[in-house]
Length: 224
Image (cartoon, rainbow, N blue to C red):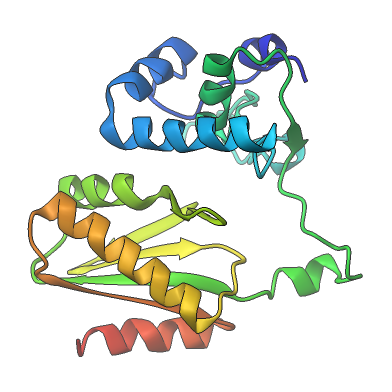
């Protein structure tokens, strides 16, 4: 897709203005975002393209449930995943970008979509020594929501949450061996410690296969 068509036809999900000019301004001033862009530009220069395409929203995935006033939310096409890749492409002067409409599971091994939804997920649980308020939550999550762990491992999280003194970050549909989980846990710990200015917390990364396993880890985290 032409980059100009993408910028005119799809909106960024943040900030609330949903204007590319505002998004680019954030990227130009945020230390975390500048780090992501730097890594993406290195990847683009080395490989000629990004490891993953830019994911576009689809009307099929839109929630048309009426709100409390009975109004049906309009569908405005947006970037589902890859806003940083859009900006890196802009900086690199690319005319075309690789896109994909919606999340499409890898069914190359003949796995059904129903079976794919049961794939394991990897989660990092961060147990703080204090209750997690919104400002602290977003400050920490913003620092780990997307980053390069190693030259061959880049993490993105679309699901984060907090409850009491616990923060959870889920790396969807990622099953990793123990060594990689250790590497991820060390990287997350370092980034959180850098943002906090201390190491008064515990982080553990694990892979779960069922909701009951996920619940078990949540319960276990209360004992840390």
